[in-house]
Length: 293
Image 1 (cartoon, rainbow, N blue to C red):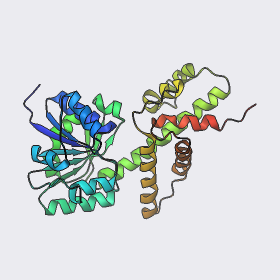
Image 2 (cartoon, helix red, strand yellow; image 1 turned 135 degrees about the horizontal axis):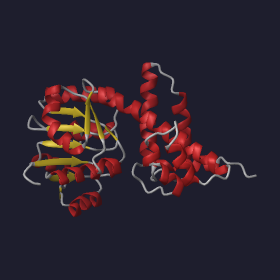
Image 3 (cartoon, rainbow, N blue to C red; image 1 turned 30 degrees about the horizontal axis):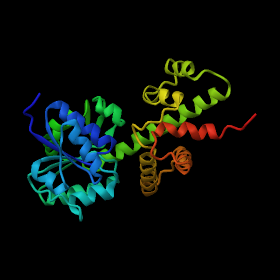
Image 4 (cartoon, one colour; image 1 turned 120 degrees about the horizontal axis):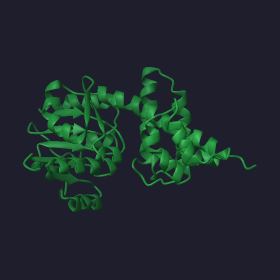
């Protein structure tokens, strides 16, 4: 396919590269920028066009997908020292998991400059997103979402409109909490089964066919069984998200006892040098807590 026009992606890590793949497959001419030059070079190998700066990318594309690490980086590229110089020509689609209150304020400031800002954090790891199975949790005005919809449709199989900017981020934090706990529960169950001498691959199939099934078993189960922690989503990213959950929970007065336990497990993994591995590596911490017979 061809002729759909241009789209930009700022931030070419695991998720950003998966999004660029989706856009390329849909027929877009894709421009990309990342502060790490090797990531931009990788985009060029995929058929995209590498830009030397965010501002250079903004000159080429009216629709720009932001896939950077955190809220600070989103604010910087939209209006800070690293600003791309967005103006009323631009529709921004922010796919990063961010502080929802700060994104709500940023969207309001962008609108004052005439810049359309759509918050669309994604549910799904990089492999799921590359295959078209990601889900966008959208916040913003209906008008801005309509402007972003063609690109959203290319990126994800499904989009949920949740209300004003900030709503998508709030939903994403709750979704990520459940996702992280699902991984942790599966990891603990597998570690327990392993300690009792059960064959893990067979036991994983038992769990998939039982009342305890979760989609995490499809996406992370065999990675835990095989101890294959090639990253589809970095564990360090999970810690960033859970730290943000705790900050937001403190603002709204909600205790998160299970999230606290998960965060401690992740912190221990990172202390063991596992932060850049897949988040399924949490099973290693459960294995480390097995006492020798």
